[in-house]
Image (cartoon, rainbow, N blue to C red; front, side, top):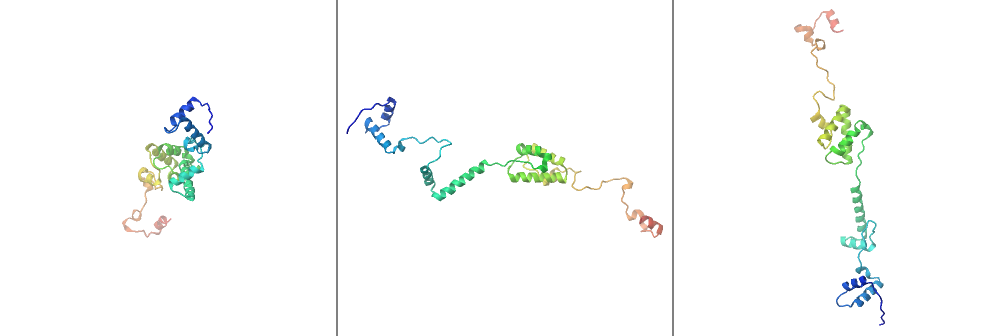
Length: 214
């Protein structure tokens, strides 16, 4: 076999010298590496590509990954789609927006949601909160609704509900229905038949009857 001399960089030569098997000479090992490279079989001797955010897996890498997971082509596509859905679900968060109907307590509700509320902060939890605060404001007053929001923020309540307000926070003098005021004034007294007729029963005097009956 014809041979020829070539010049190699000292670092390259030392690197090849360190990697070559004991049963091969340095020149023989270099010749083997060049031959493998020439045939396109150098993949096993090189480092994998840098895994950057822009790196896209090759078809061969995807096939190997499917084989590891024991999936066929169609199952792999479904699996890949589900993984994408889970990733999208994790990154998607509910945006808390107070409706216009509760504009009077918009700032207070936002503060409660961000700083005071414990438990779940889902869209369902937000809609329930809006509904219950609106009911408190409608049945009682906006000032009482604001008071409940302030207490919830300070004490870290999980939620605000009309039921809990009526059960635990309703003041004795506050009610949904307006009751007649109690008065001891004689003019406010509700007269009974006995107060007018005494023990004798209704009068038979036509003049008194006309006065009493209007």
